Length: 142
Image (cartoon, rainbow, N blue to C red; front, side, top):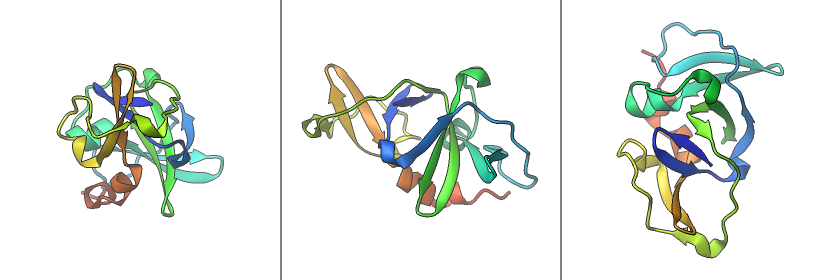
């Protein structure tokens, strides 16, 4: 479970290989501002993408020390997704699936498929596959 701005989001655990603190990155010339750079993660080059920068075309995130990187690997693509915070791990029963979503920013909605309800709290499921395969996400050059 994680947050991008005020949006409570979850993604399947199988989509996340690892959660790390923001690593040192080497900048890459000629890329969009939301591409933070490339990090060396145990010998593998990992592009680090700022999710606020990508979704909102700007960043008003809290201190970088509070943010986390979701390392995702789908369809042969590896990416480090910088999110505002990781709240924790949640398990949802199959019957907790809900079409009723929490209030979401319009920038996030294209990457949400459905949600889950846990008590009074609602969480939106971010479709990481749709994000990584999105043309605007793949087009990182200026």
